[in-house]
Amino acid sequence: MLDLFKDVEISLAVEQNPKKTGNAWLVIFPANSLVQAAKRLHEAGFHLEDISGLDMAEGYCASYCFDRAGQTGDNGRPQGRVCLRVFVPREEPSLPSISSIFQGAEWHEQEARDFYGLFFDGHPNLIPLLMPVGATERPLRKSPEVRKPWLALFAGSDSPQDLGRIAFAAPGFLPEQIAGPPPERVPLPDAAPGSPEAAQSPRETAQGATP
Amino acid sequence: MSSVLHEQMQGDFYTCNFEQKTGEGSIILNLGPQHPSTHGVLRIMVELDGEYILRAEPVIGYLHRMHEKMGEVKTPSQLMPNMGRLDYLHSMAWNWAYAGAVERLAGIEVPERAEYLRVIVTELNRVASHLVWLGAFLLDLGAFTPILYTFDDREHILDILQMVSGSRLTYSYFRFGGVAADANDEFFRRVSDFIGRLRKRLPMYKKLVEKNMILKYRTIDVGFIDADMCRRYGASGPVARGAGMNWDIRKSEPYSIYDRFDFEIPVEKNGCCMARYKVRVAEMSQSLNIVEQAMAAIPDGPILPAKAPRANFKLPPGEACFAVEASKGLAKVWIVSDGGKTPYRVKLRAPSFSNLSLFAEAAKGLLISDAMALLGSLDLVIPELDR
Image (tube, rainbow over all chains, first blue to last red; front, side, top):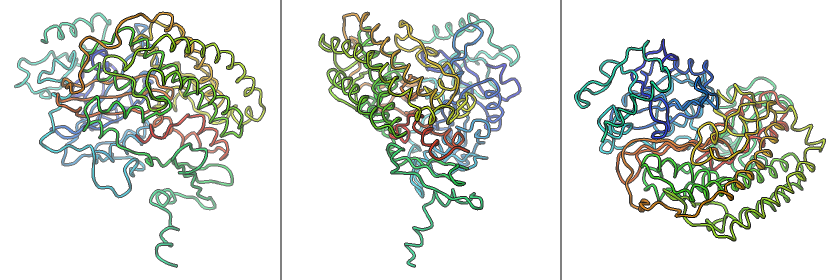
């Protein structure tokens, strides 16, 4: 997976247990590398599943799910779901549109605009889709007192290890003061997923360590 | 002219927006929201050159009920009845997607008997959904008789499903960790009677329909959708399989006990309306095979785990998504929880939504009557699409 994003800037890449979260990979990008990441996925034959928003303490999150659509990997087994996420500041909720690469993203982006008020730069027709024309409320935005930080929502705890096997983390992205010892950080070129066994073992030890 | 009348003649927001790009000499036609071939309240705006479509844009949202917001203000158990009101033709699949996501997040184990019952009812419901599609699609193309036959067969399935779930259409049969009610011997007897009946009737359907010249002219090589288009738009289910993609969630991401059954994934390469028709008809007999195998292997035992969650249980913090193969394609529920009484976020990924989004591209250059054949072959259910 990290091979695919060799020339794309990544904030965090986590290999997850699909039996626990439904995703095989969770990759967090800065907003400006989103389009390039989508291009790489399109070239690799990925299939757009959906795009959804999320309101968090740090701002908004746009979550993009991609699937290999029945193609099998090197091990002969179908490949799992890849979830890309981008964090957007609340003050200026704007991010690039991927509708030039995956045209199906158009409607999903319009839906995120309706529900969260996100603005997708480069979208050809960013008009109301599901909400009535002229509606100004954004129904899925949360009030400040109920918003939760992203790590608590994605990992269910304060510890990044609960996300899964951390394959790459950009310096300063994970909150070290909460997490205690810094997580396993593998530099990008070495982090290519090798045999499935090699990928399996660190994840299992990480799970075994959690109570 | 009064100003109100003048405003009405301008058209609404969507028409005005669509008209901006109109070329010279073409006309704009609004199909729906009450057009008979849109099956519900779907509206499609088309720009026409004579009878040929230059540009199309679906307008959706007429049945929008904001299920995702309801998911955030209701407890997980309270949201279950909503799942019957998304895809009302295959609501067992949505029951499963939601129950599966909650079970995955909360780590709830499902007893064997409940897994088998889930497979039986979901596959029967898939057959019922395809039967409705078959009748309605042919009705769109001008054949009135088949819908009377398919609704007759569907009626048998509804009777069977009513025995266990208590309802005929908007099922709320799944529980977190199992199902709501056990099946008795009468249920299994009627299911096996029905399998025999439909196996005899399927060849008759094929004879009735496939040799008809009108149907052939209206579906073969009409409304092409290729695999790349499916990838770019996220189309799934019979639309993707009709475009040559060998992709079924029951095989590619086997959930529950689907890996125990011997069944095939029908795939057609052509990508036209006929290919999608063939995939769905072949899927019906594959579903019957699965039901038959499940009936032979179903064990005795409980239908809910010993520690089944109570109505007021709280989801642990974290996130999980769960995808199932519905009759329309990939139905997925993504739940995020902060450990509170109600989920933090519930995302419903509806297959009809993505399947319809490719219509604008696929309909370009078609005759308007062929575009209606294309629309029918997508098998849309509007409440699911609008959520």
